[in-house]
Amino acid sequence: MSTTTTTGKYGTIVVSALHARAIFGKLRRRVDDEGQSLIIKMRGSPKAVMLSIRDYVKLAAPEPEVVRVIGEESERNGTSKMSWREIDQIITASRSQKPKR
Image (cartoon, rainbow, N blue to C red):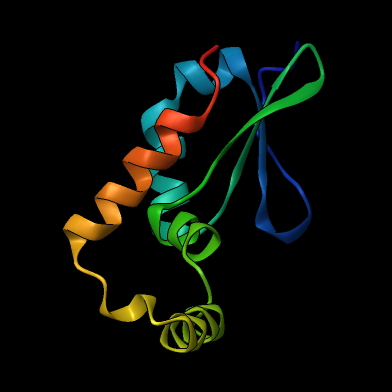
C-alpha cells in the first residue's frame, strides 16, 4: 500500500485510504482551496471520490436548460398551477400503489 500522494491527470489527487485518513485535513483543504478532486484507493482500486461542494453542486444540480424544458412541459400539462397540497396528495397516492418490499 502506497503512503504517498500523487497527482494524476486533471489535477486529481490519488491517495490510499490509509494515507488519506492520516492527512485528511490537508487533503480536504486542497480539494476546497485548489479545486482539486481526490480519489481514494483501497488495495490499488479506486473506491471513493472527494469533491469540493462547489464541484458537487455542479454535478448534482440540473442545467438551466433542463429546468427551462421541465417548466415549459409543466405549463403545457397544466401542472405548473398545482398547490403543494395537491402535489403531496399525488405522491402519497402513488406511493400507496407501489408494492411494499
